[in-house]
Image (cartoon, rainbow, N blue to C red; front, side, top):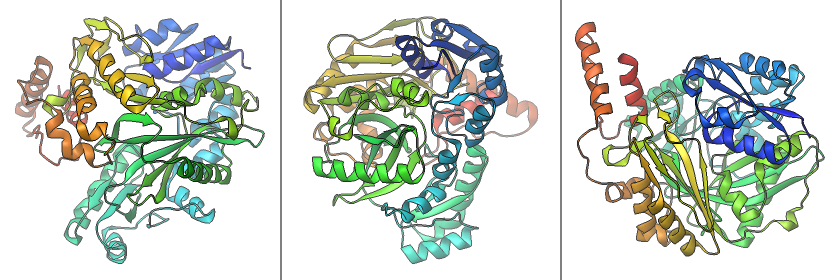
Amino acid sequence: MFDSVLIANRGEIALRVIRACRELGVRSVAVYSDADAGAPHVRAADVAVNIGPPPSSESYLLGDRIIQAAISEGAQAIHPGYGFLSEREWFARAVRDAGLVFIGPPAEAIAAMGSKTAARTLAVAHGVPVVPGTTESIEDAAHAAGIAAEFGYPVLLKAAAGGGGKGMRVVRDASEIATSFAAASREAKNAFGDGAIYLEKYIEGPRHVEIQLIADMHGNVIHLGERECSVQRRHQKMIEEAPSVAVSPSLRAEMGATAVRAARAAGYVNAGTCEFLLDRDGKYYFLEMNTRLQVEHPVTELVSGIDLVQWQLRVASGEPLGFTQADISPNGWAIECRITSEDPANEFMPSTGRISFLHLPSGPGVRWDGGIEIGSQVSLHYDPMLAKLIVHAPTRPLAIERMHRALSELVITGVETSREFHLRVMEDAEFRAGEIEIQWLERRLASLTTDPGTADGVRLAALAGALLADSESGVRTDVSSKKGSTASAWQRAARLESLT
């Protein structure tokens, strides 16, 4: 096992890795931007290193600076968490070239699975079912139109270099293809530095089901079952659970074996996830592989009894897996709610400010993976996720009731949060019956959010600043929240902040 590990991340995932290190007797090194100088993960680590100003482009995304911090503090390995540099092939390679260990897959595996088109090609070559589509990026809108005509509408345009709903457009008619292609490519370029787009057939009403994998350096690749991730808004997951009501033991075994086959084909090592679409007839299609730890990994930990982060560290240090596939079967049910600093009553507009009061839920089967405390400042510099609330119970109905109880106990003041939204989902009859798919939330959203109220001071200040900037520059900024806008409310507010 390593003596010292640097965590190249912030917030709740940095704390999660620090705790895993502590339980294994490993010294932890945190990094932080100026904005995070007082953050909980900075105090929790054995040592912390400042790496730059608040913008992530000047701190958490500077791989050379992070590697230098690891070397200067005597760390032997770097854990990237998720987001930031976690799926950057060049960073994994740079860590290795510096004589350190990247706690994640080899750079070659990231390259093989990091591009969705490359991943699809690899999957097809190894008999993994994929949604009908292209295995190479599309040249232009005319090229896209020709392929769409061949497959039949609707089709889905997707960024080849990323995920999270960025650079993604559903096209239902040939008249939409040109504008949708341009918008998807532009968004992909802004988000990932690569505007390449590929196309696939759009499947109506599927579930998003993913398989968790863990692989060691000794040829052992094991799946830990599935997660149901269908409760999504604009392709962003909001609630996850394990297992899935739609997956039988036989289907679990089949999908798991398929995911293992894909991982072996990529030469995969460490934790990773294969994402699938599962249609109404029980057919599944490979979407992509996330070559990192997932945000929703706690639900798998709770039903499998496997500490994924500790095993990431163990595998990276050369230890073989201490369990076999026969040891893995779901025990009970787990649900995770992402608690974000967004206001569901106002189209999930971001809320910034200082956490003035925080009361955490507790009791049997309740887990809080958070990165905030009283006094924490919530800004627009980083992702709006404040924490994850996770529960575990013997059955799904009991897990839903436990989550409802835990959400009722949770109190966060100082910023608006998604708590009330999650409470309403737990009360929703369709959700309780497991009748969900990836479009479910978009259809139900109006009934799950309160009537829009008066914007708070933060949003009014942002709007006033934007209007002031307009008047001074002579440029009109559209700050409206148009129905069907491809930009998230968080992105729109971030743009407003940049104008002030």
